[in-house]
Image (cartoon, rainbow, N blue to C red; front, side, top):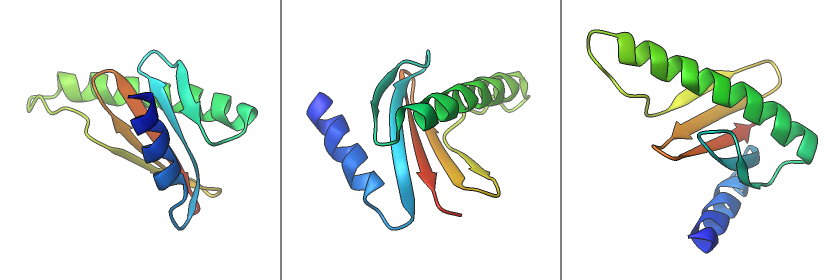
Length: 95
């Protein structure tokens, strides 16, 4: 599985406009990152919090939807977050 994660992350990080990517557990433990250590830590903290809040809010809605993808645009970059039951994929893109 580690080889598959590595190959997928490198393929995604090599796409046009991609600044890098992170694969982590839902608890926030980084499995692999193509970003520098400081950026990885900062992005991980923010995205874990946002995903937890989004899942909580969706779980309380009448429709009972589950979070499949989260996109966030800032002045500096764009984040695409794909949560799974155990893992989280975060891609950082140029806006």
